[in-house]
Length: 424
Ligand code: S3P
Image (cartoon, rainbow, N blue to C red; front, side, top):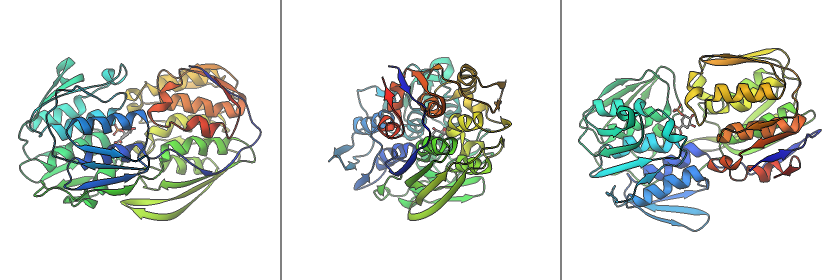
């Protein structure tokens, strides 16, 4: 399906109902499997990726109820199933389930859609195999479908080469059911929802800088009682919309203000946007309101804390296209293995919109200029689709293949429709 948007002269968004956080929603469903008693999750992300995870949790034996507002999960321990567990488009789903199922009794098959089946899994299957997990897949365990036969896992001291919350979380989940105290080191702090949530549920986890120490569980965890905050990665599309449109503002409420998640807003601030943050709540993480006002944007170099803004780089690139001067993104080779090769898909689409770029192995440069209306492809990647629809607020845009937006932000078009005319 193709979506077209029209250019606008200003937008003012308030009381905006941004989608609940995807990372936290996945974790709520999975971690409830480790709890004794009923977990209660309010504001769970009702999108394809997270519903796939929830279905898998049910297939693994948990009792799931949904009254439309609160999802409850009652675990009976992880049970073997005759079903193939389909993670859809979600790398988080597949990689975290690898960690969780490596020590479960039984045999499990994880699969995904055509995009997920092309994404690298060795980053979790190898360290898990090294501690005794029996995991396999195509290309010697790198590509799904993956087969897992639960085994007893050895304690580990693992130094990861990449700053990846998915790898860290998979290893923490394995550590909880290993035979001793484990340590995990990462080169740069990646998002830390797993540590915060599992600690809140009673797990013994100590974080010291880049090192995480995990003790095996001696008893089941306490159930989760949580309201999932809004997703800063989803909110960021509308932050960029407000920043690039003259005389505009966006008030984004109930968003997690976890520092490992709001770095893209900090970069937008460095570019000149007027942004403020107000903490209104604290539950596992700080939660609050982000207010963004437009301003003339200037170019920026992004080369640090990349894992804190990796998901927002496509949308940030639209702000870069509207800024004065050349912006540069470096140290972001991870972009190549996301839902699409986001270095290539961003650069190709910006070029179609008349913006000059330079492509590097680990990033790209964007020469700020005037965006022109074009017909671009999403390449099946939700964040590429949404980024270029937001660019369309400046110049009009046609984006092909927008169904993928349902993986993370089901009410995106409803919110976009409050800014401009959208046609399909
Ligand atoms: C996620 C971690 C990040 C991020 C992804 C969600 C998570 O991936 O890009 O969208 O929920 O743990 P990596 O950990 O692979 O960097």
